[in-house]
Image (tube, rainbow, N blue to C red; front, side, top):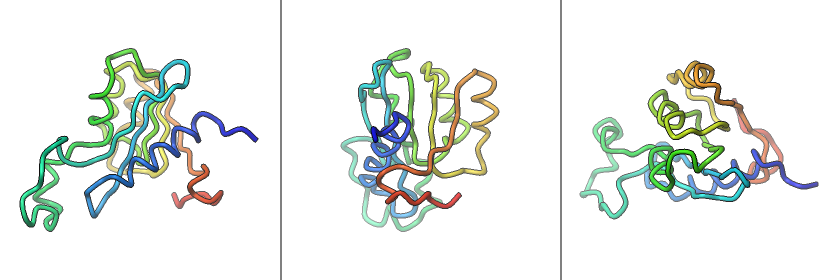
Length: 146
C-alpha cells in the first residue's frame, strides 16, 4: 500500500525532530509544494550557526526566549505561496499558526496536541485544513498517545 501524503510529510517531520538540540522538547516540521515535492525540513533550536554557551541547555525557562520554533525555521526555506502543506510533530503554537497562514499554507498536519495553542481557531479563520496524524511508519504502526 502506498503511503498517503500526510503520513509521508509527518514521517519527514518526525525525522527532522531528531536533529533538535533541545533536551526537553524536540519538534520537527516538513513542507511540501503543490506537486508534493519536499521543499524542506526543519526543527526547533537556535539560529543556524550559533553555538550555545556553556550551561545554556540546563535552564529550560531561561532559554525559551532564544529558541526558534520548527515552523519558523521551516518558513525561512521558502517564499510565500511556494508551499502547500506543512507537517509538524506538535500542533503549532498560536504565533506559528499565524506565520503558516501568512505564508499561504493550505494544509497543516500535526501529531501531538499542544493545549496552549489557538491554532484550531486561527486555521478555521483562514480556511486552513488542520488535521491530526498519529499513525505513520516511524510510529511502528501504533498510534502515538493523544
